[in-house]
Image: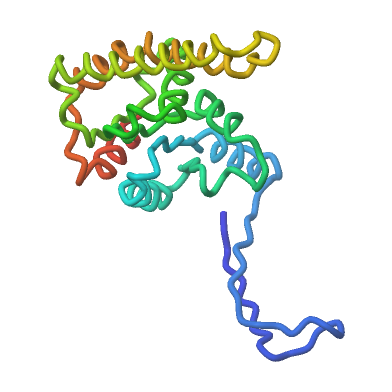
Length: 220
């Protein structure tokens, strides 16, 4: 049970330093257990969404972020807001697996970005990842198998170029580059499965994708 108590102390000085103002305070009656149950229910209903995008698609990302962030119980994780100064970008990207859902803005530059595709390979480690992602398709070419093959070839070539570059470096000095090569190979081997999954979806138009994501969240 709830009752509103009106605080009408506008301009009245109380206790030396506090000057009152008009406000409304919601006072709840009932046991503390009831209050705890309400809080637990709210926590249970809270969901997080990781927004994965290439910075060239920032306008689309901002539009989706603005819309979804207004929904009750939804928190959108976005790099420019959630990576602190001098904090690890890679650790933030790895956090995609801990979120309830991920929105992937699939554009040409997204599919050629090692950071974006690293996020994709991370979320693909989850067994039910296909049920947790909302592809926002910008690059319509992915529906063409020849175009999809081109992206796989692109990452194979990137692997070959990095591997050739590492050959000229002493192995003792190439540990980090070898780790990068491993990530490149993971992207190359995952690209076909990822693109086929996205191309098989009845993806909404990019101009209304945020509204369709909202509808899907309400159903879940």
